Length: 224
Image (cartoon, rainbow, N blue to C red; front, top):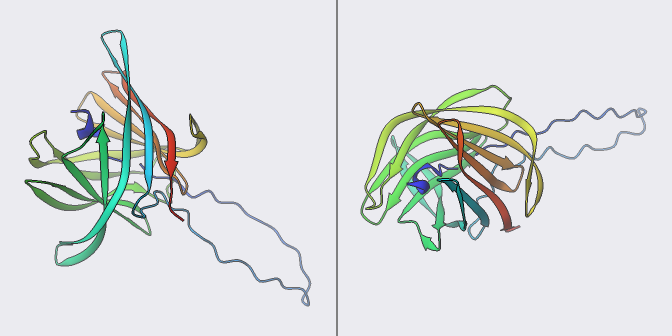
């Protein structure tokens, strides 16, 4: 199912700049503390709306997807407690029956599993590394949920940061993004675009070297 490969969901590299300041011994201005950019703001009520285009049999089908941080809870994994946030999709006008659990740590966005009305599976793996360099690779647990709400762990998937500071155009604006490619099996790649302090702004699904679907941000609301 389409929503089963929306895994997620994508990280953003911190842009670095060097500023040279010349000052005398009697003129030393305080330096503002560095604030690390969030790869995906996770405050409750944050909402991202996407225009989704699916390509099938020489036709294009367009619809709207909605992602919301709908709440938070505490989960336990390997005797450690973690505060996680509900990554909740509304797919083609209906809420998904599965909700991914995510959290942001110092090294990026982490995936803690999925819950549904009938099942729960808690894991812990890095989703979107941040900060990150182009060419870095890691693995993420491949946790999927079917239409009935049954959740399975199907090994792991390979993720690579294929670009940093890449321009990505959407109806909501043009964003400078980190691009993450997740490789599923032999035929499917998902490219996720994350913009600093905005979060996921789009993704592209490639199946058998052809674009299967593309979603781009059309509006968003980030709580301060």
